[in-house]
Length: 97
Ligand code: SF4
Ligand code: SF4
Image 1: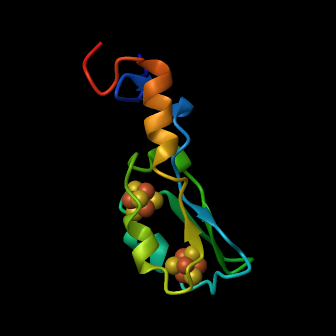
Image 2: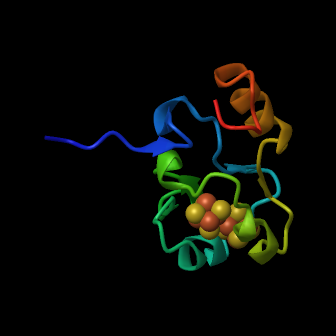
């Protein structure tokens, strides 16, 4: 049976948290691909650009790979995206339901 990944009780597929790459800024250095141990990124050899291949493997709330991109090409949603989601799902948040 396949396990459904969750984040704070919410199915991971419903949590919008993953990097985006601005192709116009990306130099194709590949540092993000090498940095992410979760294999969120994949290098597109044809286009010579990194791609976000496995967005739901990204650790929710983390944005550490932004720091390795010298071109400022990586962005994440604002952290309020997550707090808003938690408030929607659990009106008593941050207290336990
Ligand atoms: S680290 Fe930045 S510039 Fe380098 S491949 Fe990744 S997104 Fe592109
Ligand atoms: S925040 Fe972490 S898990 Fe998510 S893409 Fe960046 S390095 Fe990978």
